[in-house]
Amino acid sequence: MDSKGGDPSHQNTDFGTAVEFVYRPTAADFEEALRARARRSPSGRAQALMAPLVAAIAVSVFSVLQDAPLPVWIISLVLTVPIAFWATVRGLRTMARRLFSIVEPYGQCRMVADDRGAVSTGERVSFTVEWTVFREYLETPGLFVLLGGDRAAGVAVLPKRGAQDPADVDRLRAILDRNLKRL
Image (cartoon, rainbow, N blue to C red; front, side, top):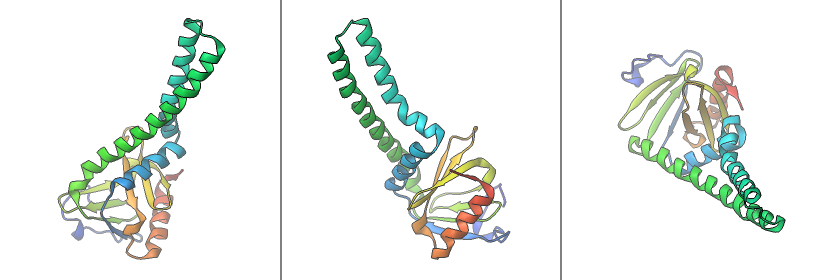
């Protein structure tokens, strides 16, 4: 794939078997991707559990320093930890909306992928990415979610509804399995 850009419709994507997806991203796609990342990747789990853990530690330390009775300590934990979980979920929704706001102007997207990488073209932008940019991927019922490596903390979302043929989902899964680690 040409990593210099250019018109992706003229680029050679016939190395191996190329697959094409056409879709319009939605905020729900990003929310599903971030929830899946929080459940299935080590960094996502750490990020999702950080607020409840910090809340539990803060309540415990404050209760010990204030010499609070045990029932007050327990009630404080019971109230604080669920609120921290709720805040974490709310934060994922906010992050999803922000990510969507970045890609929303691109409009309808066309992505062509093969064993070298992917060319994505929107109504206002196009870019080429090699698989080495991503380290791993996970799959949800509606998406493929590509996760960046150590130097690229990005998340790429590819909705399965964009497959031109139902077999294209299996073909893309095979390409991803050959090039990335599946979570």
